[in-house]
Length: 244
Image (cartoon, rainbow, N blue to C red; front, side, top):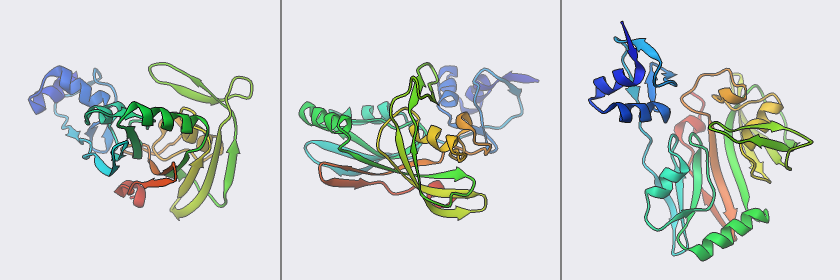
């Protein structure tokens, strides 16, 4: 016999169907090591689910102007914002991306920080595990066009795209995967994911941009941000420190 995934999950956990569907939609529900992606998909009633809740939000730095946190995976940036009183997001990270996330504590600083991003006065660094072996530093300078929707997707387009520059440096190799350090000079939607995929090294777990590897999340971490002469660094989670 089969039942819709969210209904079976709701029964197993003793929660409402709405809450169960939300957990699946957020990418928190697994069967073995496989993520349950469709809440209404029929599934065998003997299936046992595993729910992995996001880790707690770690504060990196705080003063009267700014709050900097190490965002855990599977939390939307707006959920982080809602977790603290009187703060507004300065920038955003994708739901599955971990690392440095900055929030302003007043409108004056928010405007100042956003202006700094627009003027490219902010240095942004990431770390990722990618498919294949990366041997040397690569500068990717390819314009990106983003098609907005319920699930946005970005493409390389010299005609429609906006300037996008990504610098990729090899860090270590483990099997047929490489750990790389990344600096982005621009901040286009899915820039790192698309650029790495375009050079044949999609981020591990990024099925949307060509990774064949099944993982709990896309292995991308915002490691460091430099702004207004200060440096904020986020400790790498275990899945970034070492690939399996």
